[in-house]
Image 1: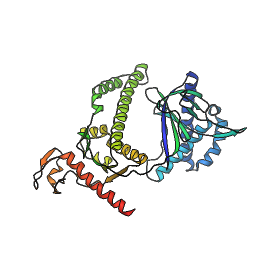
Image 2: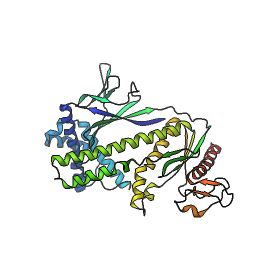
Image 3: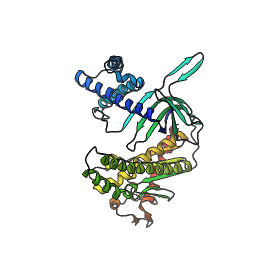
Image 4: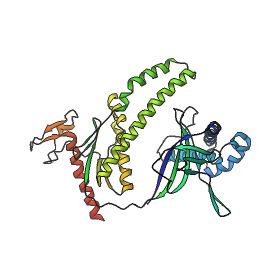
Length: 382
């Protein structure tokens, strides 16, 4: 099975390399905006024709020749993807890029052979902790200490700078992965929520740390301070960076926590079943506090992580119907109690069999049973 995997490293460029990275950011943004405006006036054209015109544009704007030419062509391909997504109704009309937003550029791998020896413009050496990039040369990197080399073929690299002035490179690699489906010996149903992020049919609960709320007071204070400062001043930029650092801390904590949960669940079970939640629909007609808690929980991200890890480890992953009333059905006798639509009821006695049910554990057991049906239907078709 062929898969694409991205390896993200922290970059440590010297002053000369940093200047060239910023020039490439600006030139890539200029090319993207130039051809977006051109196509607005003259109609949408193929990226192949625009790449031909790029040579003339470079002659008119000499500074474009200072940076990586592959990065400029990638900007044109990115613009084409934007129009394709717009026509397929997956996104809105492409917008002009701003120098105040996230800065990044992508460059493609080019291989060549000279006197029987192969060369490429992108190379990663995890032993010496250096990466070679077009025009930039060798740059020190950090990350993936447990690996000696990257398996597979490098496709491209994306260089970016975040709001905290840290530089990163994401290397996209095409790998050939031999995945054999495991023989299932265990199954787990998972109820995803806000009070507890994950409740399994084994009775294990993973709490929702609500990391955003821990930093909410500090963020509000800094945002009020920022609103009073002169936009663009040194103090304004310092406060803005402090806010960005807090958001980066929240993002990294969530990423680490969700990966730990996903790894533990997938490693311990062969069949994993979750609800097919429509998270976007859950934001509609809800209170502001609920939306904030739902956003902080990152339920959709966790589900995607579990699905991906099951795919590469040969495990089985199933999603049950969105509207399946897992919380309303008693997992012992099958009686459906419509009164349980009230989310404030966390524990109850079944009116039919009298069994005391924990709302979330009961829901996860029902999800497990539905997952078993899906699995047996799949096995019978094979």
